Image (cartoon, rainbow, N blue to C red; front, side):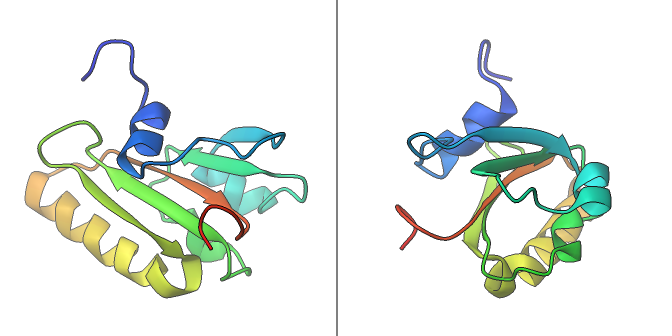
Length: 119
């Protein structure tokens, strides 16, 4: 734990990116709501927390960019990013391996449509 730093801030720092693009909204939601409601049409950046089931796998748009991180701010930190269709399965595998190894997982991720600065 880093005093004053949230998991969302640690995720953005780990991936060396801004949380939002200029003028775009940020939505923080849960994995359950992402599964039930999908990705909001007007979403700029969508941060997903409390997701025990890799809800990103329920999304049809494989071109979304995902920035995923586990154990953020610790020596065990893991970070993966890329196009959802390219890295989704890898994230799910790495996440399960880490959970098995440590006995628990604490992760979060950010989703957004492709564009600057990812391209």
